[in-house]
Image (cartoon, rainbow, N blue to C red; front, side):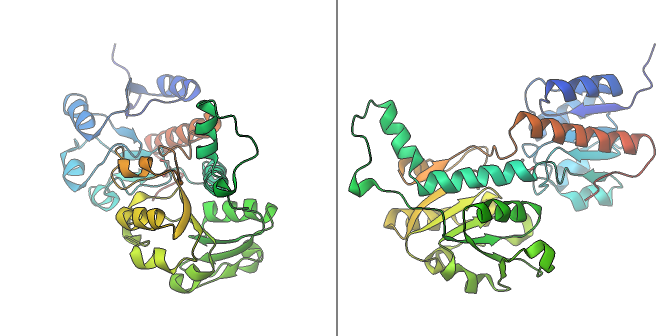
Length: 320
Ligand code: DGY
């Protein structure tokens, strides 16, 4: 007997909880490994789902969107960013596109702060030495880190995640500057100083952290922008690799103009420029800002709720 449940292609591995919900609620094809776009099109060529749950690994450009069967009614991103897909092309085909705002705000700010602390305090270098059996305790004068507490932090992009970063920085006694398209109302600004012009903020930012979507923002941090930061600044990116000219960042790290960087995102993901891994003053993580049990579960559940709402004939909860 055929099923009447909506057909849903789940292209990334979900938490056990979300996987159980997907299987119960839908006629779900669950990927056992995270699929890329070729894998998605291959399955959709044989099995015409009405909904697809994707993450940033599925690069759905306009051609890929055009190749999807007519059955597709919703593409639910299990991510807040959706610069990996051509949302305009999907919407032009009448396909609803959703994302998962809110649920990964804290986790992303947590990881940005981890990178900020780790890069400033040379955590990678000390940790690597300990694993090699280093016996010199207390640190050497030429291996000292920088004290993050009390520094001036420049935040680029003061949306939910930027504001969560600011609230963490307040606990460290930092002066907070921000650049954003629009000035926030005072209750959201909470004492942070607004710079309508990024160029004017950079020279004051002893630490700079990016919190804006990729896509149309383009390459915000190029050689000139890095040069505008004060000497010895720390750079943190948990947003998108496309915002950064990586050659310029490497040059600034090598020359010592930047003290250190903490990077979770890269231009060529899932690959990354291995020259970063050769530098001791870089702390690297592989795009894992949302990778906690709680947050990945919340993201998957939110994506499934979006699918459920649309399949039931209602409005999406998080249309983009
Ligand atoms: C997002 O949701 O956009 C994060 O970068 C995780 O992919």
